[in-house]
Amino acid sequence: MKRFVYAGLILAGFATLTFAEDVPAPKAVPGPGNHTRTLTSGGKERSYIVHVPKKYDPEKPVPVVLALHGAGMDGSMMIWFSGLNQKSEEAGFLVVYPSGTGLGPFRTWNAGGFTGKMAEGRPDDVAFIRQLLDELGGEFRVDPKRVYACGMSNGGMMSYRLAAELSDRIAAIAPVAGTIAIDESRPTRPVPVIHFHGTKDTMVPFTRRVGRKPPFISLKDVDESITTWVKLNGCETEPRTETLSEKDNDLRVTRQTYGQGKEGSEVVLIAIEEGGHTWPGQVPPVDFIGKSVRNVAANDLLWEFFQKHPKP
Image 1 (tube, rainbow, N blue to C red):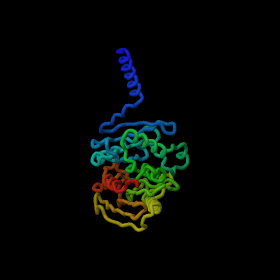
Image 2: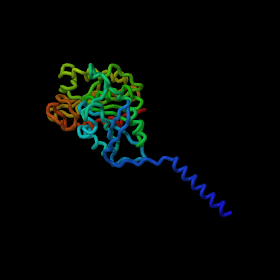
Image 3: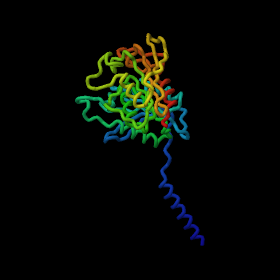
């Protein structure tokens, strides 16, 4: 009789071991700091950096801010250029720095608008960002209603493209010194926009009368970009204007709000008079890109805006 009992215990043990092997072990929760990840998109290895704040609680849904670098940069350079890690620590959101494609750290985004040879062989960066968000959701407890995108220059152009073509995932966007580059924008829902731009930006001109746009890309100017999204979101056509800073570094900052959009959406333009091709609140890395305002921080304003606009 004892032999049957022992045999039963042994079989039960094997069954338990087999069952345990079939259950995947839970993923280890990444600690605070920057973590590099890779994935394959369009047959190519792509990379991104995730900054996890000390406040991150894996038991609670967490907002995500995608921070898209400008042309000639990569994700790691966007960390210091934008200063968003500091805001992430303060507010508790994940900030993700994807890298575009190109040689070494000098990357670009397929934000649309490229002409000639620059248009050849461009990757599907919208598909890459969709895959990235899928991967991110498997590693972190992402709040699907609070996924946002911001970007500098070419990255700002890409954030406009994400709003147009990935509106099922992106709640709101904050382009900085970047305008619309795609021919048509057809979002499936209204996407709130807060746009930052210096009026003396000579690299991505505020208007067609200021500076020269790059010869290899076709762009809308700021007014055309704002008008496009005011119409798409069904906002009021006359903005409410207020002054945020009268004179800082010889710059004046105004906020124009086009409200009353569909599903509570709005479009906001932060105009930095005499400002250059910079990230407001951050010190420009080189002088030739123009002046930057110091006492109005894009990071504070974009996060305040994002908090008001989760995806319905």
